[in-house]
Image (tube, rainbow, N blue to C red; front, side):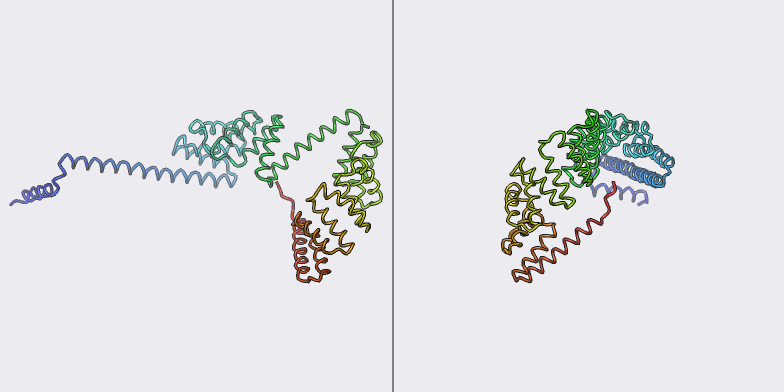
Length: 398
């Protein structure tokens, strides 16, 4: 048998061994294999292309961090050459141009991305920032609002929306946005700062309008008294409050304010006189009675202090200072168990205050409970240390 026949027979045996595969079936298998190969090859090419794209992004980031913005732009342009219209590249290029204050160019690139996907992550936010940079506040507000409608808005979007609203003169809406931020995060220093600025500016404007109405108005003197008191310029505050009383002798609240200013300067006799005048205006006022109770405790007139402090407690049952002063009253009368109860109530009302623990340690010592006394004194030292450390911490930089 010739070699050719042997090969032919071998081929025949191959076919006979696989009777289910006809010639057409073999062709189909080969076609499927070719298609699979074709699908694998572009995928490999895509992977290589994605790797090259990411390499260009990384190069652009390196140049940007170094301040070489022109080189960074070239890297992004090369990335667009690899993948024309790639939304991520366009977004990154737009952010770079925004950094360079090329707002028009950045807007054009952000819009290209949004034409591709109207909710592409964070692009509406950056578009709003570019409009904000151009003082086009209406468009900035619109972009920020679109960003907030996305699944995962940029974390500072609401803050910049509030700034844009403020810049557009829509103060009530801006205040609402800042307040919402503070409600969600009470430690948001940026939002608190902006709120303080808004209120401060409104206060200054109102004061200027008051001055325009008349230099010697009751309202202006009363307001200036509050301003000086807030700044701890107490003699000047007292002077303004007295001028306010000359304009309106029966004005409620002025004697109380003068009393607080005297009390802050440890001028207790003058403070008591003013608080007693304030008490005639409202005998059940909790804070007026609290100050009078404090003065009485300071002077050792415990029965008089009880009278005022009970009224204060009725109006402000959870105020720690009320319980602290009541505890001092009881201790001054050697009623140590009652003093212990009040000091514990003061600690419950304010667990961070150190002084009640110190006084409670003394009470336990007088009650012959050295272990409890030692525990309270240790807590006093711990809280005192925390207060000192907090006072020494630098103010946060915004």
